[in-house]
Amino acid sequence: MVAKTPARRGETLPADYSEFLAEVKSRIASARTKAVLAANTSLIQMYWEIGNDILSREEREGWGAKVIDRLADDLRREFEGMTGLSRSNLKYMRAFAAAWRFDTSAEIGQHPVGQLPWGQNVMLLTKLKDVESRLWYANMAVEQQWSRRVLEAQLASDLRARQGSALTSFEHTLPAPDSELVRDAIKDPYNFEFLNLSADARERDLELALLNDVEKFLMEMGRGFALVGRQYPLAVIDRETGESQDFFLDLLFYNYILHRFVVIDLKIEAFKPEFAGKMNFYLNAVDELERQPGDEPTIGLVLCPTRNKTVTEWALRGMDTPVAVSRYTTGDVTLTETPPEEMKPALPELPELANELTGIVDAAEEIYDAQEGNGDRG
Image (cartoon, rainbow, N blue to C red; front, side, top):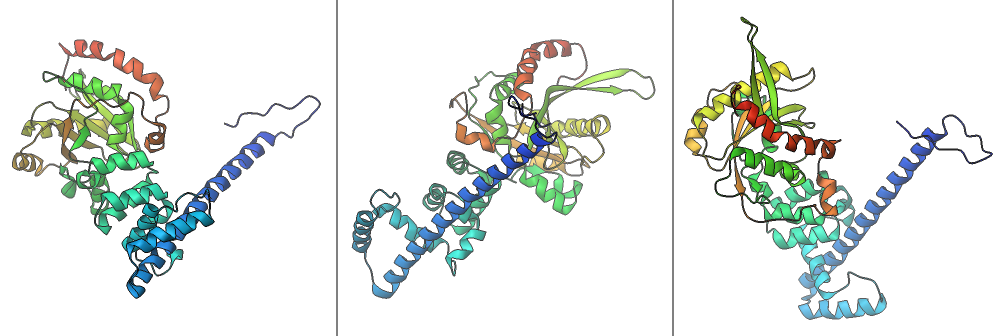
């Protein structure tokens, strides 16, 4: 809904003026964004060209390191006040050109590195050794609009190695293209080191801790995850007697990229085969009670601190529902309570979640008390 623009005294505005104003604002904002991106690409192209020229002369004419020192001094005298012309940055330009062997700088505009700020490109050069890894993180940074700080955090947590590494039943329960997409949305292990849990913590303590740090939790879960509820109730009615039995899901998410519900079962002990059977029931129940037309089949994620690979694979073998088993790590590392501004673009949008979260957490103890003599305890 477009807010109406009040007319100034004596003015009569057309009925559709507010809509027109909104369209113009959107067009200007879009043009400004494109201008920033174009300017960044031009800068990256220039840096590549300088680096490539240095490389070429080193190879043809045997330039040494001292030539770069002199070049930096001369350029800074000529372009006084211009940043980015230091000796160290010229060396980064040379490394950048050596890492990305284009025929011409024009190709950079179509490449992920041409869409990343220079600081992120330098980070990829200094923290990663192989081209394949650099390209993977560059693609992810562009696709998910990571800030420099978020990229640094994902590199530190070795996201590439963790993504798609969970043990799952996806291969025989989902069609090939879909199974790969869903697998890539699941990590192993999950990094919950922002939590500070005691050694005797219970599953509900883990749930509450994750929800109290919901923004960090959702950033670790990845793009597309939106929280539906904690201890989400499912009322299963017996078709013979009509009696209702209540079950409670630890966490229920909806992934708007995968277009499916995701049930998460949190455990504070090593994986057991019965966890898979329980998740199978949950998935069938959610598909029957919550799944809407257009939704894909619900997937399940069992999160445990440890698991035996053979036991887990045997437990998942033959299942006809898509279940993943992942580990998680926790620690006593405490991050800032509010994530930095740079991280916020990478977080999934959660309409009204902030207003609802307080009620969810406050109701937690009541839910657990209600479960004492009523149905399943998750």
